[in-house]
Amino acid sequence: MLNKKLKLLATWLEAQGEGILARYYADTGPIQDKVWAERAGIGWIGKHSNVISREYGSWIFLGEVLTNQALEPDRPHTEHCGSCSRCLEACPTQAIVKPFVVDANRCIAYHTIENRAETLPEPIVPHLQGWVAGCDICQDVCPWNQRFAQATDVEEFQPYPENVAPTLRELATISAGARSPFSCLGVTPD
Image (tube, rainbow, N blue to C red; front, side, top):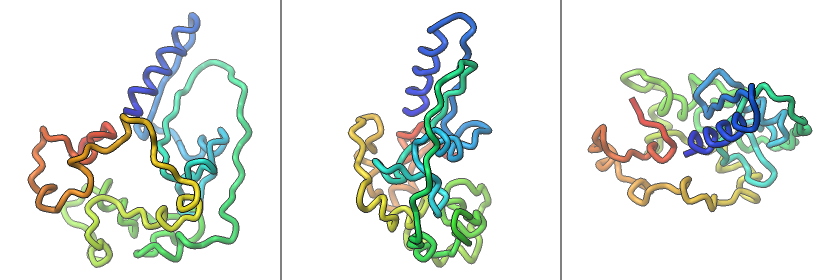
């Protein structure tokens, strides 16, 4: 859904005049989306390495539209984690090795979402606690999420009812053509 919205914006932008070019990405291209989100004033990169917005916490999607047009820049955001270290202390695998540095080799989210190996590394398995994809403890404990995060009111970003808290048995029987828990994000697992 985010890709569709970005495509609409890019198409609109290009229609504003001859020679205007636009290209969009949502975790699909060689764009440092977190860095640009911070520089665009959307939020700051937290100690857990996710972008945190004052209004929405870190439960946000990032997407970019690049253009050849000169635009008025926003003010870069400043960091507001302060002395908080909840995410570092709560990480079950100590993947956040120091503030702002996540070791993917220790990260449950990396191994359950992006790592394409046949099996998970042995040091990760004891920490799964029933998770199938991701972990998000670092986001759960973040005070910005506890105080400010809001559920979206954008209908297209709501999960499909059958994808809320599926059992492992249900997940094991998903076919290639079924609506997977990832299909609402426009992502299909390999």
